[in-house]
Structures are given as structure tokens and as C-alpha cells.
Length: 277
Image (tube, rainbow, N blue to C red):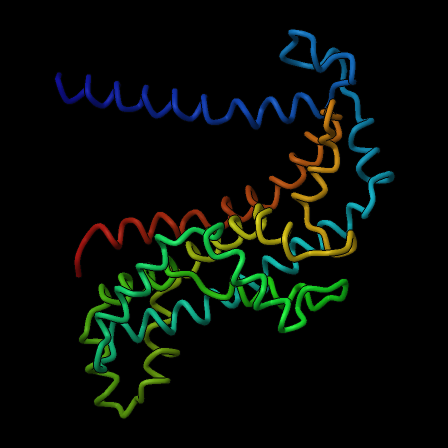
């Protein structure tokens, strides 16, 4: 009986948390279909569906909606690829290879997680300026890629996952004459699909929603990303809420679709990491 009550309370708490978490997104969807006059009324739903906000962001904003989506998607995809390549190789090195100072170097990498971007923005910006990467040319994108090429959290996640892969696989591969590179590409990577999917989703989401570094580096409207487009509707004295929420809804859809597609990999990773192999 106590077990059933505890299970019921747990489900109730999770359901309540899910409902509270969904409220902001529901409000965004509802507001995107409202008129300006309806925004400040105490109506949860619009009196009728109004697509004016979506027509506005599709035809009247500068830069265009296509350009904003393309820039955000291009930057996010390249950053995800860099995170997967550099994070997985570094994680594999820290997990499986033996070299002097390995543990100390790993702790130093983890220590960088305690340094916020705001603390290093000045030296990084000066360095990028001296490299000629802060300009009105597409070299801005290269600056973004260099800054966000890899993260300590990715290295940590890959390392922990590779540590849980049985060493028997490595021993059998070595008997067959497999070298370190083939060991990584043929043994480790195929068995790491859950963590690859997880890192990809987290990296894509973080890059897609990032405003801090793009606001500092991207110099021209043609290079702006979706967060810039959302800010365009926020003025000093008033905010154009329906178009702003319409763009928020459209910007959220790719993250939602990617998560729905790859959620099974995340669940497998969580279940796999719960049991030490």
C-alpha cells in the first residue's frame, strides 16, 4: 500500500512539474495567434486564430526569416560536428590511453567549466580582433567555431561513457591486430551512439539558443542568428509580442523535433550509465 501511495505521489509530482514547465511554451503559442489588442487581455486563448504575426515574420523582418534560420542551422551543425570529433577523441584518450600527466590534464580540463564566458570575453575578443576574425565578412563564423569547438562537459561525458565499455572488446580487437585509430573508429564509436546523440542534442540546443558570443562577434545583419531576430521585436518602451512569440515558436520546433527523434538514445545512455559494466 505504501509503495502504491509513493508511486502515485511521484507521478503526481512529475505531472505537476511537466504542466508548469509547459506553461511558458503554451503561452508563447497562444500569444503568437493573438492580435496586439488581445495580448494584454486576461484571455488564455485567442478569440480567433490570427496568423498575422506569422505572415509578418515571414515577409517583413530584416534579415529575412530564411537567413536567420540558415545562419543558426549552419553554426549549430558545424559546432555539433566539432564537439563530436574533438570531444570523442579527447574523451577516448582520457579513458583508454596511458600517458604522463593524464589525470592532471583531465582535472585541468574540468576546471575550465568553472570559468564563465563573461570572465574571458575581453582577452578572447582582443585575440580574435588581432587574428582578423571580427569583421563584416563571413570570417565571423570562423571565430564562433573556434570559441565553441569543444567543451569540457563533452569530454567528461565521452570519457565516462568509454570507461563503461568492457575492456574485453579492446582485448579481442588487439588480438586481431587493431591499432589505436581503428580501435576508436571501429570499436568505441559504434558502441557510443547513445552518448553521441546526447552530446549532439545538448550542443545543438546550446548553440541554437546562444546569444552571448554571437552578439559580440557577428557584426552585420546578414550574419545574425535567430536570437538576434527575436530581440528585434523588443524595443526600449514596448515589445511587439505576437511576432516575437511567433518567432519563438518557430525557433523552438527544431529542438523539439530533434529531441523526439533521438530520445531513445538518451534513455539508453541513462540506463547504460546507471549500471557499471
